[in-house]
Image (cartoon, rainbow, N blue to C red; front, side, top):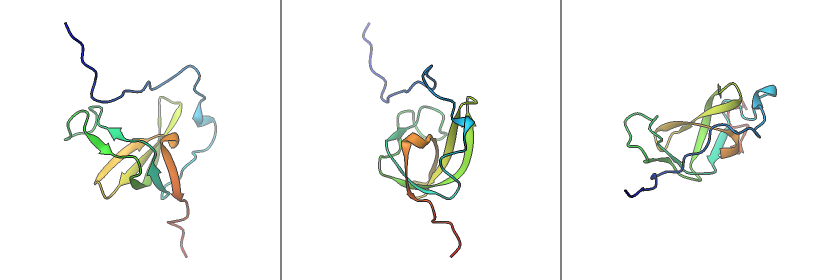
Amino acid sequence: MTETAAPYRRERARSADDANELVGPPVLEQGFKVKALRDVRNDGTYPGRPVGDFLIREGDVGYVISVGTYLQMYYIYAVDFFEKRVVVGMRARELEVIDARCNDPQ
């Protein structure tokens, strides 16, 4: 019997060393313009796309559209990557802020 590697890297959701992010306010806010710091593949939770398919690539630009939580420990930011026509949930460490004031009235 031969084993084959999964076509995508799966990260552990929780580690004993992780701090609870929810003790403080979210790092990002709705409307922030952000850049992805890594590729994101479909792990089977994104409908209509094959497992392992790239949803976004490192460097893709999007906007935070909402802030939620995961496992009562992490903030998850729903990011609309409008050019790719995809919305992906990401952690702050996977994103870089490009413009925090892009939605401020002039």
